[in-house]
Image (cartoon, rainbow, N blue to C red):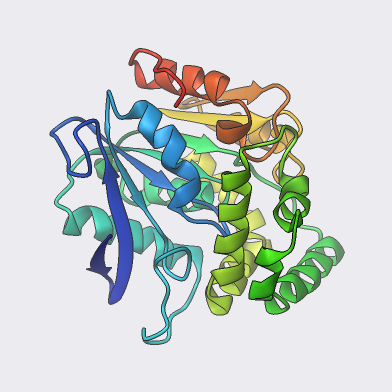
Length: 284
């Protein structure tokens, strides 16, 4: 396990490469996870891409293994996570990378592309899009989400089938049991201020008003991948976001929802490798 101090916080990170857990000199592909999760759910995708890339995975502050039990107080606006990503690349002396980000991580990546475009060769946004602000719906979402975050109990992890029930809203096809259990574990263990802060920041009036402009300013070649049956960020939201910039290509993977890279890894990797201009790997 490796940690590195970025903007005053210890961030967990790891390399997945064809030669092991050290960079080999190949182009670097950085994976950014979404809300409530960690880099763990990116591991199978990264391992499949190791023949072509040195894959860098990290856990954002307050999530996964980047817990902040002894850390100073922090804010959890998306901008702080954008600065963390830039700081991570600087600390690891990486000058040019490709990005693959998911869900809330994709919102962070969009902001990153417009603030630090010099770092990025190309980007993949998995399950991303724009939405309209509806005050009543947003307030209801924040209230419900707040309850969900506040009333998490570690013992839920030990109950049979809790992971499957938890992941049901996110999936159209089943995923390996270890994946759903890892995501539930990450969600239960996430720092409460980080879970609440990122949720309120990503799903907000400000985000609804500013993200269309952020998508329109993207100049880095970008692939936006949606799941056909995604209930969290519907494919239509992805289509609307992609239409804002000539630099964004949009594809929809049939019969998948919010985790297309896990639900249909073969199709997902085919789109990704075509976009990155490398040969399609075997699914691991």
